[in-house]
Amino acid sequence: MLKNDIKITHFVLIMSILNFLFFHFPFYNFVYNDLNCKTFNGIAIVLSLIVLMIVLNSFVFYLLFSLSKFVGKPLLVVFFILNSIAVYFVNTYSIIIDESMIGNVFNTNKEESFSYFSVKLILYVLLLGVLPCVYIIRVKIINDSLKKFLITTAFTLLFILTLAFINSSNWLWIDKNSKKLGGLAMPWSYSVNTSLFYFHKYKENEKEILLPNASIKDSAKSIMVLVIGESARRNNFSLYGYSKNTNPLLSNLNNLYHFDATSSATYTTAGVKSILDYTNTDDLYEILPNYLYRNNVEVIWKSTNWGEPPIHIKNYQNKNDLIQNCKGDRCDYDEILLNGLKEQILSSKKNKILIVLHSSTSHGPSYSNKYPPQFEVFKPVCNSVELSKCSQDELFNAYDNTIIYTDYILNKVIENLKQLTEFKSAMIFVSDHGESLGEKNLYMHGLPLSIAPKEQYEIPFIVWVSDSSKQLKPNKLLSQWHVFHSVLNFLNVQSPIYQEKMNIFK
Ligand SMILES: [Zn+2]
Image (tube, rainbow, N blue to C red; front, side):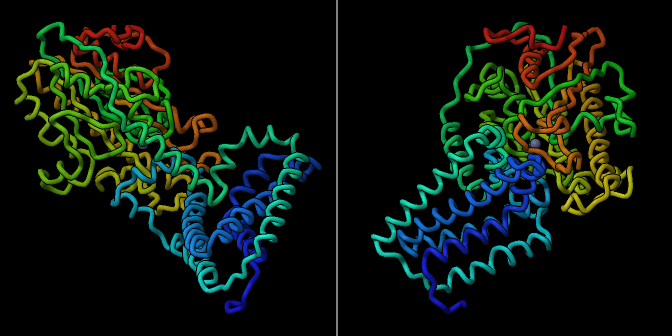
């Protein structure tokens, strides 16, 4: 069979059926679960979708290979390899490959991507990707004549249109679920969404829109430390009523407040942008650190994470910078964010200081690698990157240990601030988004907000103030955009864009 010649129409049909069989179990699993398949209408949609998918993909392959086999073959090889990787992640983490997920992929650094490697991934690529590619590369395809090409094209289009017309009553269902269906249809999920991602990224590289100038209203020395959490979900903080004691240190502090909050999105780049933005916007306005730095506030940014909007300040340190100045066995963990911080504050000549610590403490899937061994309080823990392989208990234990470590880091920030007695200080901890830990068979984060479960957007918003006379408003629910205005208020920075209702302090 490998050496035999094959007609182009047969070849593209076989490829499309293989594409359907290999890579669309999650797609039809979703369709099957969402539709009532005992009704005639339910069965009709499923069958129509199968036929439509096979015919449409055959047709696209047909056009590509009719153009030239030098176009068709490389593209199909790339599709099968990428499909096999994509479907592994879809199966393993129950993700949807939409634009934000593509963003996550491109924002994952080298080190982090190694943590996803597993034997199962290699098997997926070999069996579902490489094996069919051997056939694709070796097969000899006999192309149609121009006349036959035109006839085939016309009939296929007619067939697709007829099928769409018959199913017109189901368009609503397809439209309602288009995000999920589109995110599971290979290879279009990542092809279309990668194009969208780059289109939007190109738009984002526009120059940021400057906010109106601000002025500092007094000369009192004050520090605000903003800690941006990673994948920290509210449910697992004992401050919020979680049954396991994950906040042994914070729960003993005075002047510590916690609020319910929801994230604006379920992925890092959008969550971090909202924490730094003055309002809910897709545009690139001057973000909090850039704005304050331009208006004479000392701004220090330390990060073990990524995915933030462009930052234009002098004191910026990423993980590599931090590791270079670190000694000891804790340099791989997020407390590295605190190294040298006090010295930096004391050496500043300014009265108003904003410190942003962008942590990565609860980032999956390797939760158990994110904290030093001493913080493995709950055992046994999940050590596999295939989270569904772990028991619910092991998974929660590993995740909860990251919250205990977060508790330790936040407490350490506060201890540092307490020692700086000449400053009035405050700390705000807010997460970029939440995290799924197997609820509804979902893991990690990144589902579109409209369909995401609450675990992925219910976030903690924790505030500490050094001065017990500084009171907080009794807010029921905060958003990430409250940060900007609260920081301005605390540092006594006056600005035309300041909104009192978005300020958490009295
Ligand atoms: Zn994140």
